[in-house]
View 1 (cartoon, rainbow, N blue to C red):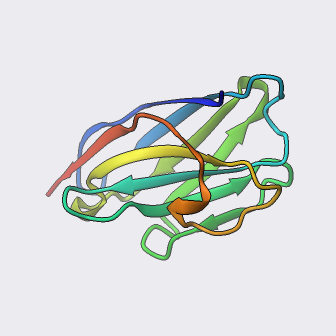
View 2 (cartoon, helix red, strand yellow):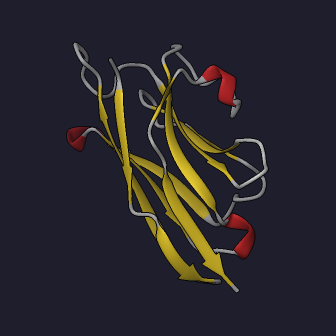
Length: 128
């Protein structure tokens, strides 16, 4: 069973930065098997929104337009970890942030339905 544990959320003022981490466990596999890993977020009353994804094999990344140029997704295969560096944070970035895995052998898009495994989430709150 794939297990994902997020950390690094918190409260920050607008313009600030946070780095989220996700530690992944893939029983029977090493991190770096050809999966798509992503970050999603969900604000109260809103649908879950794809933020960024990375294909573990090539490191190829995709970003939502709303975060492009401000957020950076990265991975450290040796640490079985996924990261999301969030800069120039805005109040509208406030949400629960989730790490997720799509075990297809390529990234199919920032659509929650493609991702079969999810962490519990970490809260990010940005005040104005």
